[in-house]
Length: 294
Image 1 (spheres, helix red, strand yellow):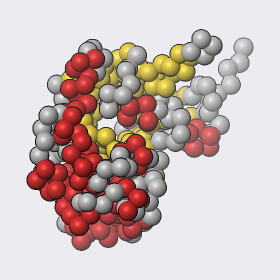
Image 2: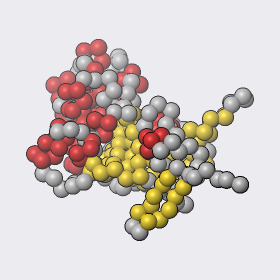
Image 3: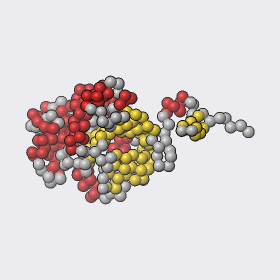
Image 4: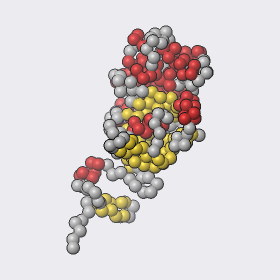
């Protein structure tokens, strides 16, 4: 569904040039439920904006489905954003129109695409548990209810992929769990690809795969050890200690052999700009380089 290779994004002003993505590689399979994590400034939001068609890449390759987002025209971009991708913002004010009801909000993307379907709009709100709130306006809904309306809106035009930017960032834990359960059910029942961007490791523990981004590059992946766990076992794992119990960590190696060693490992060995590396049987050993003499 998503294939990024050597993805670069540079922001330029008259005085400064900022490289937000430095040759990032990532792939996401059709129908996958995954998360992208990273601290502020890591490049995760830039990647999300590029995948959502809200920002243009500077270089590299980025494909979503049939679309090449490096070469896409402005007219094609409108079609892409309308039909291929659904977007959920952390800030509900960007998701919803306050003077419309929940039902009318879900119908807005349908009207813009010329595909009005009120029964489907009602069905979406029932899917997210708001069948009883169809005619309520924004001020009559809690924050969690507003976010669930936002999920219904993002699915209004039956997109192939859903992008969610910190979708549980402004709600309590119980509502966060409810929203994640909705995502998982949508993923399983209609097969939609869902990419969640977050800095919250506990949220990341509730998806099948996690990709960590650091300094504009993919650094680590966490993959669920046993995707065939039944629901009761999975709940025990998810509530029994978080990411480490459910996911296996992998360092990502790109196509030319580069990898990011976790920062805490480098600090523990006091490795800065150079390291000594050797192959020892079936292991690669990285050490602090010996002082060069003479």
